[in-house]
Length: 220
Image (cartoon, rainbow, N blue to C red):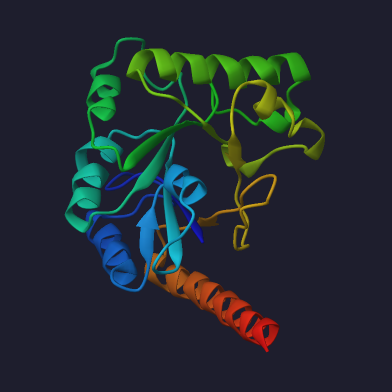
């Protein structure tokens, strides 16, 4: 299950308080292995069910609040930045790059506009230039792309691949599978984040039970 979060202690419907984020992290402790997209996609086996944490937009709170909390819980996560948020040479790029290896950096496009409405040439520039900019500023490999607003056209899913990405994510209430072309994520909002999380976990656990039952039947 992949979770999509945004700002912490900020404004708007997608911003959680620090206490709410801590409650989300605490709820995932012990039962789940909490990792980045990169770790989920690269590791062969896990000892517990996997929850992937992603944070969109590159808010300053990802460095000031989220990163220390991830370290406290020994969690991994992927931060999706859009490259126009900060100017070239901004200190946040160097500071994020210096964070421990459990953190992965991905692209959220160049301008954070609705890319579904862009022509192919403009879309490719949004994809390619954002990846190259982030890699240059941080000195890190950028492999993942998150579609802004979860808005994309099925006709354009090959463009992130051509721009050098190895995976792409959107939003939608589905459990992700490794063979998905684009990985769906569950969004945590401000109104009732823990209630939302419980509903998502119930769906996840139901899928896990179904898969475990199928595996038992296959062994008979």
